[in-house]
Length: 628
Image 1: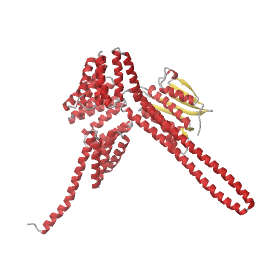
Image 2: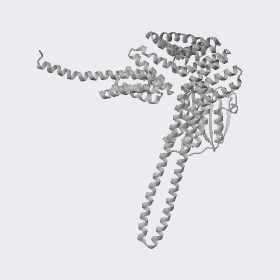
Image 3: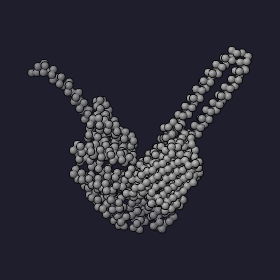
Image 4: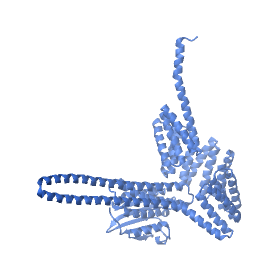
């Protein structure tokens, strides 16, 4: 039989342990929600992912668990990354990284640096992406966890492939494949082999690419991963077609189509139908191809996939032409051109047009407000003069009345001066707000163009979007300078050119040791209406040098940019020491860049001279320019 003290002791232990057991159950539940949220995000079920993440955070908040609350930022970062909001995702990951650094949690730091590498690559900061991926690998290895570095190595390989450093890319893919073999991961093996196949295909090593694609298919078959098998067969079919092995190419595309018909993705079904039809056309089976293209169009319309619809229209035109039906072929070519224009031009042009209209409207409204302010000021001054004259007249009659009127006039003038000062301050605030909004809108368009490039495979389309993004960015820099400086109407061209050229070098992935820059820009303040066309012209000329003067990965050289006052004109010169142009600028046809330079030169009343004997040098003498 238990004594009283034994019973009391047992009760005390129960009272102390029950809350602890309850808290442990809550932590286990939060951990379960964390895992479910992560899995739901991986499956792109974002609503369910967010619901689990919110439940996880609520439990940790109730427990006042700082580590758990910080961990929720990692979940929200994953959610925003899958959703495509990379800046928001980066904010969550950075918050989580700082907390884990405080806690010295190297396992979590390895994971968050891996995610930040993905985010920075998506945002175009390839140097930052490489740095984060190497930090992730270093943290894994510091824990003795070498096997979990394979994903970081794969991502690094993709980044180096993107900047055309193929040898480094191959080395990293092979290292990741070696780790996948050590882990005996069929999924990891297939993923790395597909990456290697894409790398070899990009270098036109078709036989080598097909060999590793076949190996990837073997491991996807073991895991019964239909998505991967369809993708591999489609890639092999495309490479066989490039080698002229048309019957084999058709078989591969048919295999890919057969697999995708069992999957729910309408986009991939449409792509496969179009690929099979293209192979049929090459084999002279145009009528059969047209039937397949009807099926492709039905699936493409389900998801409103403009890029696939464009490809279908182009393939249809080929099929009709092959069948001798040139009237329908012409109609499909028109449809292709319409879709191509919609994808590449209309969206960008509409955004820029809307932004320009908004800016011009706000500018006119501001001018009206300024005119009304000046009118009120003039009326106040006239009224003050009349009152003064009246005061003097009355002063001749009654001296006491004169003193009273003078006192009233003094107070009224003081109030009017206050009104005038307030109006002037309001004008300055409104001007800053206008420039700030214009800059934000231009940055928004630039971000939209950047996101669009991730879904474009056509190099011409990708180049057009990149050029549009650079042009928008050159205008955004002007308005950023205006609202950040005390001078709201003038732009410091020295600072503007420095930022513009730095942005172009980053945009074209130019390393510091690859191309030297000789910048010679006078410290001149110019009016906004002058800087906008000058900036766009400089953007086009510098972009041309970066694209065409040094077009091999090993090339290096020098670009010189000069802007100075010479007499009553401005002298703008962009020169490079590349191989030189084989034709005059006026012979380049009706390209958008040439027409833009021509129109802006006429606007500035500028004469242009081109020297292509040693490198390429374009000099503009600008007669029409204004200071603020």
